[in-house]
Image (cartoon, rainbow, N blue to C red; front, side, top):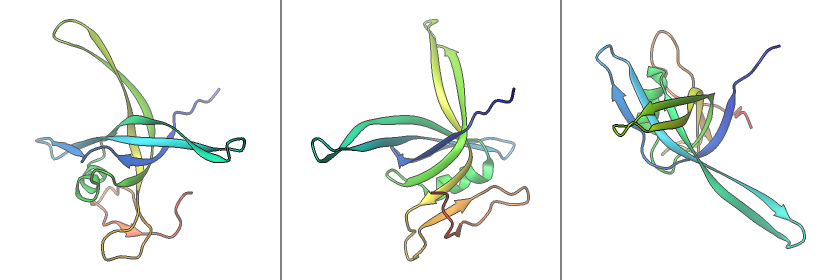
Length: 141
């Protein structure tokens, strides 16, 4: 039987991306992403907002990490596709801590960039070079 580990999130950054660069030229970018769901309550005749969920986002692809560092800021809206990763570590006191992260495979910058009329920018890493973000009209939702 086949299995699938795929996550799709659309949310807003909780803070500016943090990037760590390595000697081999690679980099990792991480940031918290907030998502919130709502529904319409017909009895109360109003929209009901649910609690905000926070996700730990990690971008290991160097090209995507550079794009995130350059274009994303606190409050930016982004579409992310990735996989769930569970990690654990030991604190100095010997306590085991657990972390759930979303490892990004693809992302789309949402909202318009300054001085442009595009509604989003789809970003995919190529093997040759870091791509220049290109506005697209075919957003995945």
